[in-house]
Amino acid sequence: MSFLPRLAVGSVQEKGDCRAVLWGLLDLFDRAGLRVQTFLSRGCLQRLEAATVVTGIAPRHLDSWLMTAEACRERFVRAARLAELSVVEGSFADGADYGDSYEESGEPAGSRLSTLCRWLGLPRLGVIDLSSIGGFEAPPRKPDVDALLLDHVGCECEFYRWQTILESLWGIPVLGGLESAPALRTAIGQLELRLPPARELCTKLGDLLSRYVRSPQILELANRNAWPTAGLRSCAAPRSEGHVSACRLDHLEPRADPRAGLTVAIAYDDAFFGYCPDALDVLEQRGVTVRDFSPLRDESLPAGADIVYIGCGRPDLYAETLSENFCLMLALRDHVCAGKRIYAEGGGLAYLCQQLALPSGEQVPMTGILPAVARANSQLSQPRPVELTLARDHWLGHRGRRMRGYLSDRWRLEPTGALSSCIAEPQHRLDMVERHQAVGSRVHLNLALQPALLESFLRPAPAALAWAMPPA
Image 1 (cartoon, one colour):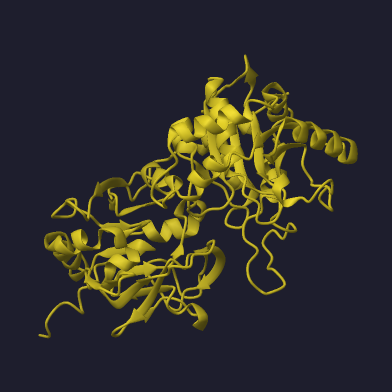
Image 2 (cartoon, helix red, strand yellow):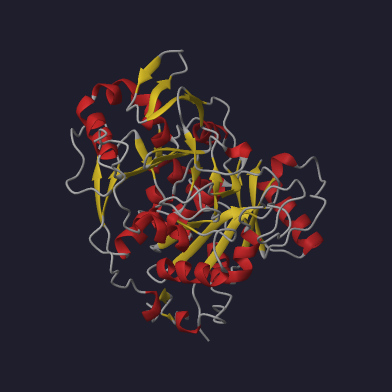
């Protein structure tokens, strides 16, 4: 029988926040000498993550809404086979398993951790927040999990009381708990968007969690389920000496791409950092030359850049420095004037605009490629799933193509001139805009999880020079 040690961890309550428990758990796995690969259960950027700090390995993305079951298994195994334990983080309170359907409101349901658990045969470790439960009253519904961890435990007596209640009531083992630790919770709440938690913070969470946790039982749970080989027979990873052996994945290995030779320039520095590692991985696997540059420091684009990719970030924090780098902004405009392509998301979209409006009311000049003012939204919500239709033939795809992604409300556009929408739906007119072959998007599109979109992104496109050339 074949195994691939893996575990899904998530809150069992709506609006539950299990970050403290998860970060402490990752710290304990690291102390045990385990190489852990984490996965996010939605194909979009997460505000805060500690996996890279604790494990030294950036999390990868899975998404039951963007991916097929087979593609999800393949991507999971590609990363998990190099680790000794895989942890998929999300929420078990994400509602019913809608799959590819829509909510009653007509909005897409998005990815479901419950679906990923079924596809990947993930044992489920749920986190229950005791601070949201009054007195001795248990949550009204038994969660569909295999084991529980308790959060916001008041004291040792409270932990064992709730362990007894829940195990007797539901028959689900309680394998540990984390104390309230107000100072540490405050520190988590004060973390900035760009800054990951300090390693010391995760160590302290691990210390607290170790008081009650039963680590051997958690690892036993992670090794409980055989790998679901149906539909992916060659991906079974044999269990050997407690480690995951590399399985044979000949059909998953990168293949030579006839379009190899394409160069994609990635903006990466303190102002622009929001990229899904999966997307960068898949570009290199397809034979693309990926070169980074800094809009804060560099005066030119990497030589031979075919596509410029500017991810999300916080250009508002570095607006003055960005606006003073005239050489790089001119290089970007020259790139567009040569008919070449730019794709920018979130903060990258704001950078392509004429001006960036700061909270102080000051408007700072940006590249001016898109005739609009980008205004930061002070009230942020979680990115929400959207499905959009291309309004016309485009280098991202043909007219009528449906694209799925996660819409962020971090930036709001105020057009100042002729700004073309890429999208057919009127309510999403300003969510993806373009000028010539420069595209700015408020929607995060994970290229790694959407093969058809990736194909269009990498397809050589003729330079659109007609608009830039003077009439004969």
